[in-house]
Amino acid sequence: MNASLTELNAQLSGWLLRVRVRDGLLWAVRGLAVGLALALGLALMARWQPLFPVLTLILISSGLAIAGVALGLASAFFWPRPRLQAARYFDRVLGLAERTSAALELAAKPGLAPAWLTEQQWADAARSARNAPVRQRLPLWAGSWQEAGFVILPLTALVLALWLPNPQDQVLAQQQAVQQAIEQQIQQIEDLQEQIESNPNLTEEQKEALTKPLKEAQEQLQDPNLTEEQAQQILAEAQQELQELQDPQAEQQAQNLQQAGKNLSQNPTTQQVGEALQNGNLQEAGEQLGNIDPSTLSEAEQEALAEQLEQTAQQLENTDPETAQELREAAEALRNGDEQAAREALQRAGERISQTGERAEQSQAARQAQGQVQTAQQQIAQAGQTGQQGQNGQNGQNGQNGQNGQNGQNGNNGSGQGEGNGNVQGGQTGDVNTNNGPGDGGEREYEPIYSPYRIGGAGGEDVNLPTEGGGDPGEEVIGQGPTGEQNAGDVTVPYNEVFSEYRDNAYSTVDQGDYPPELRDVVKDYFSSLEP
Image 1 (cartoon, rainbow, N blue to C red):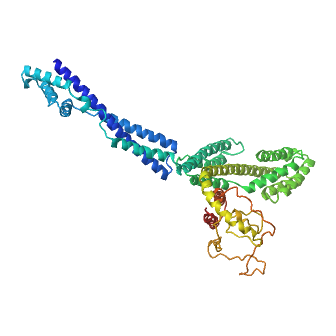
Image 2: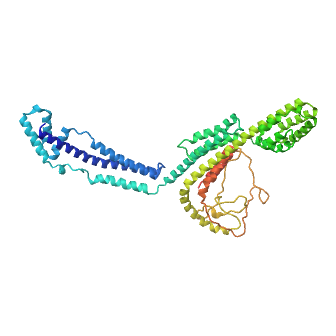
Image 3: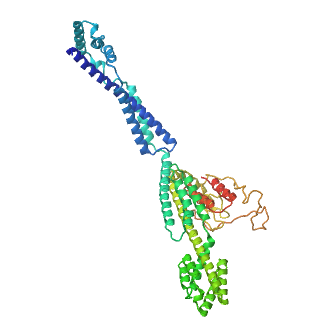
């Protein structure tokens, strides 16, 4: 290959590399500006909605900036540039009068000109390329100060958006605390299922019935987008199902049978039955009672057994009349000498005792499971309140300033004033501490709270409160407070910090209990009216 043409191609390759670097730097800055703008938009959105914590936003912003730089640099550097088209560009920029592009065209098509003319053209093009003002005409930075401004402005705004306190951080902290609490309770529920499965006193049907609501709750709690209210509702439904599996009557019967075991253990014939009852093993006690064979007993032992069975029947008369009746029939058959009838009655009584034991075991297991689920509810509620304490503490400071305006009311010894926002200790009558309620900085007319709901629906019976007069409607009911010097006390916990805990406990109680829907609405509307 001709030496001049080789030199020209080397010069052209160097110019192309310089242009690639120049364009890469320019578009890297532009990509950085785009990445910072996207990060700024995300940071501003995070101040309106709880999207990500600050550390995550910093990482995402850094990633967007780096991605913008890398994408801009790579796109410009590796952008396709045909050599002939690039040669024409360099001819214009460097003032080469189409020498470079003509040399490439002659090299591509040798027959266009005589050989001597082609070699002279290559030599002239190489000499012109060697002396071209590359550094002046092809600088590495081709941008303007505006390009730098497009980076500085979004970068400054982004730093401020990430540095200034974000009100959504507390919401995110609450959500994170609730999610962690939910994950912990999922593990607790799984451990509870294992305890139920390993209980030897429960049948397979009972284990399945007890673990069914727990498994359903565990599956629903695994939703990563679950809110605190939804988690509380899931656990409340599980508690309701577990409550339906409880049998307080069976537990009371089991307790009475356990007490009756003390007398039965004093008789040699029923000693094993009594000891099993005292130990709370009703299934074994029922089996032992059914295995008693009156035909192996002497007449005196049968008489003593009949007397013992009669006494036990009297103990169980009020709580377990069916078992008491079977024991009486066995005692009567023993006195009549009917050993077969006595044994059958003892077997029936033993079966009833065993069934009572099974029902009591299921009821106790359901009660314990319900208690643990309720504890899970409380821990989730506490986790949610922990995330709100910072925000409530700031909002509560302004609310406490109004309480100082009520200090002058402590001199009114005749009657307490307020609208129910003050703290009233249970069991006290007429003693209202108005210094603990959130004040409004002045006096206003009393507005009575009226609820249009009646338990049982509309049209219920009106009830008049008794009064000191004659109980007639229209007479005032005036409560007197203490006449001594009042202690204003100090507010240690703002009202709006404890309100949600009391509200959640009240909602949980009415949702779990067997209360009419009208009463649930009354309770929920009451707490809604007290919302801080």
